[in-house]
Amino acid sequence: MPTDPIGDGLPLRAKPRSGRVMRAYFLILSRLYGIVEGLDHPIVRIVPDLETELDRYFRMKPDFRFVRVRRLGALEQLSDQDRSGILEHLTEPEILREILPPEQFELSGFTMIQAVDVTQSEVISSLQSDLIDRESMFCQEGFMRLRRNLRTLFGKPGMMAGTAAIQGDQVLLMQKGCDMVHSC
Image (tube, rainbow, N blue to C red):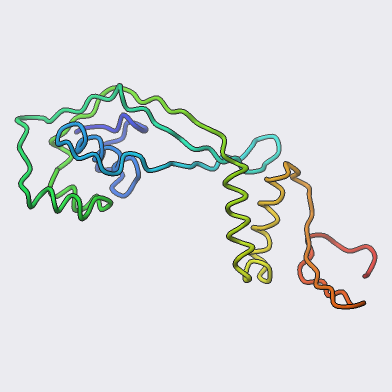
């Protein structure tokens, strides 16, 4: 059975919904059938920093030049119906499996991956989304996500945050990220 040179060497059918299966299908479609849809989908991985325990975001850019794709047996041409079915269901491995059974293909070689730190841009984007969504300011889970993102953005794992509403001389503490020693 063909293994997954893009990942951990497990058989392709062992991970039917994974992104690795989709990348394998994209390679098969591109190299053998000239269908080049979907290969440029960005991959962003979140990795915790062991020292600070803050999240780091990395955009992974795989280089598949050294992966060889071959059909086991004679290469069959795809019918127009198969091609349109593939294009309509490009992100559905179950449908692709019916048209292109993985047992008929072999991928061999290795993949190089370039990892680029995109922590700042990803965190700023997440903060923007959360600040637009009013729920994130008022529910505990949303506020904790905001606080985690602020900690990551500023590189301060112990940073505390809170929100308050001010109207005239009155201060209403909305969310607090720490114990207040002195009352407002």
